[in-house]
Length: 267
Image (tube, rainbow, N blue to C red; front, side):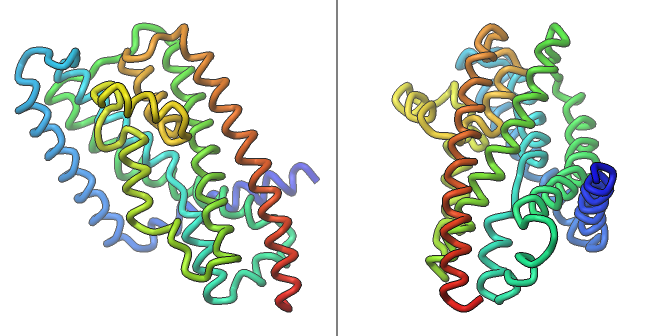
């Protein structure tokens, strides 16, 4: 039984990975778009920071933050909410619900395969190549790297459940506003993707501590570049586990109610 599940997990991840290879032109466009965005960000920060450190941040730290954030975002991203909304709108959700594996597990493995492609084939090679032109700051010890990886895995789980929950709302709202482009931009702002939270006003930085967004990628990357002390990493991990527990409970409640609603509607 265990081997059967492992085989399915491997197959689902592999097909998620291969689904990104099929559309090669889309992959090339995504790579060029990411490269262009990275270059623009570096040029802007180079103009703001100059050759020295300003805002308690050096150019090498900012380049490292941009590189690691780009890779981290591509690793933790999830399309589950959009997929659920599309399946409900087309009616294909019924096909996935009768399959032997849960829809949630299928979407998670599919996201994971796609993310592996984005990391190793698109973002990581380009970002590492360009980072050597402006400098790259590595952590001083292996513990920081290990904690960063663990936080990123937690961030991927939190983000997936968050997007999955937003997708479940489509069972009640056919035009789901929570999977829109505008909402995702708001997530980018509060998660530190657009601007490092350590450069934000104090009131905004305090507000983000009560939201799940900064625990997607910002906290792992801040630890990696030295803006968060390793001693504080355990507190961040605890908060991440709390968000995971909360989202898992909320997802279970919404999934149960959604299935009842689907049955009442006649499938």
